[in-house]
Amino acid sequence: MKVICPKPDAAVRQLDVAIGALFTDGDPLAIRTLAGAAYGIFADLAEHQKQGSSWRTKLFEDSGVSKDEGRRILHAAQNYLKHADWDPHSLLEFDEEENDHLIFMASAECGDLGHPLSFSMQAFQVWYLAMYPEKIGLDMDPVKTFKKIFPGLSMNECTQQLAHGHRFLKDVWKHKGLL
Image (cartoon, rainbow, N blue to C red; front, side, top):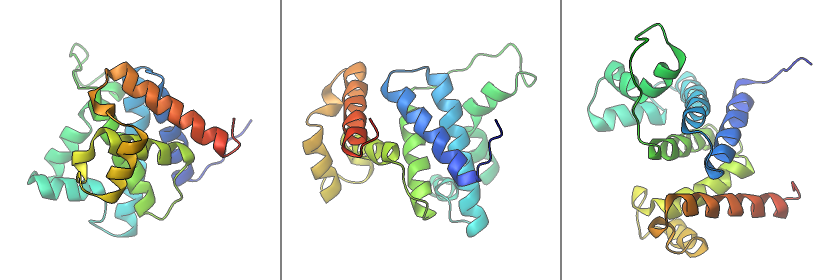
C-alpha cells in the first residue's frame, strides 16, 4: 500500500508513536529517533514559515551557542543513530530524560505552527508540565491544574511516572472514543 503524507502529519505520527513508546517504557533509542525526526520536521517548517521562529533557533540564541554548535549538540544522539560511518566504534551516551524535553519541544513547535496537537501530544504536555513544572513556572495556572491531575508525580520512581502518563493517555483516548 502506498503512503501519502504531508510533512506535518508525518511528524505528528512519529511523535505519537514516540509518546506511546515513552509511556510504555519503550526503547529510549527508538524514542529518540522518532522524537528527533519529528522535532526536526517541525523546526524546519517553522524556519521555512519565518526565519528565526523555531524553538530550536531560540534555544541556540538563549544558550549563546552558535547555530552550528547548537545543531551538533542537539542532534548528536540522532546523528549517532543514523550515521554508523562517522565513527563506527564509538559509544552513545545520553540521559533518557532528554527524550521528554525533545518530545515537549516538538509538540510545542507543532502548536506554534498552527497544526492541531494530537490527543497524545496534548496528554503528553499535561504530563510533562506536571513532571517538570519548573520549565514554565510553578505558579502558572496550567501547571497548578496539571499538578492536581498528577499529584507528586516527580517524586515517583521513573516507571511509575511513565505508568501514570500511560494511564492518562489511555483515559484521554477512551474519552475521545479512540479506545
